[in-house]
Image 1 (cartoon, helix red, strand yellow):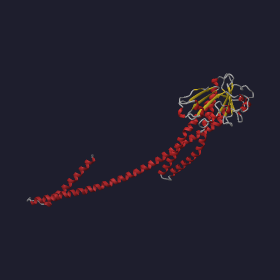
Image 2 (image 1 turned 120 degrees about the horizontal axis):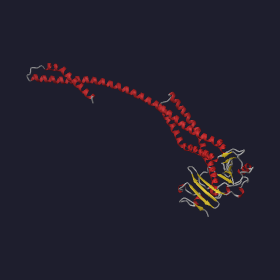
Image 3 (image 1 turned 135 degrees about the vertical axis):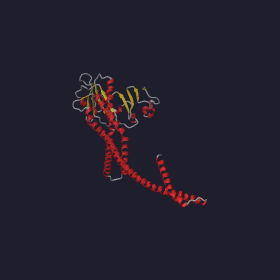
Length: 397
């Protein structure tokens, strides 16, 4: 009878039948202890890991030739096939407490792992210059879909050290594969970035030679900037995750404290030749994308500066035209004011003439024409002074 430790709302039947819904889990870790084996479920940011701990079947001991392991998984192969999601990596990690001092260890390890170039190393230091375990693998996917990692440990290796070694190696390979997920994306983006860079060169050439209107150039630059920004938003997380995974891989390699085994390549050397170029490609693509965005921003700033200068020149021309119009309007207004003084004076003098005629009719000895004639300069002067006073009052407001 198995002893299960489950989060609430999850039953053992749901776990082993693969019917668990993601929203039903409340934690990121689950351990199931069964007679003879143990299952650990871990949920990470981008993947979920299932680890099954069990003893090796009798036919898969040290010295056997490519023993079958998958059919002997304690949980059953049907359960493995029904695990939801897409498999990123599947690993058979075997730890044997023998073989470190075997003179034929390399040949037996190659026989146990199967075809492929074997890489490996001595790991850590137990005492003095002696390592506590040997690692051998070829990091190749076999016919059963699993990679094989073989660890030869000292007979007195504790369970805690065995667990640390297993966790370190599983994380090393898992994060290596996760970091490589960005490589196909980087290769796909390479051609797209090349086309975008050519478009930017063509726009800059048109900008330099003033072949098109600024509005058209600005539209093209805005469209290109939107495409690059969309590409950056879609892929920045993937590239950042690749760098983070690669950093973890390098950290795990450092924690292994490798020492070379005679005749084979160490894991660190293998990663330097295989993983490092891939990460260089990913980082170069990420930097290329950022540099393209910056170049587009500089071109946009340059074009906007030119548009602003053109707008200022246009505004200056409008201001000059407006100034000329105001001067003309002022001259017209002055002319109209002169005519207004003459018209007002004419009406006032006419009233003075009528006043003289009225006085003459009433018996006063006065000549209406003489009265009007002598009052004309006085009326003109008074009207002119009144207009000047009105100007001064308006200017002081």
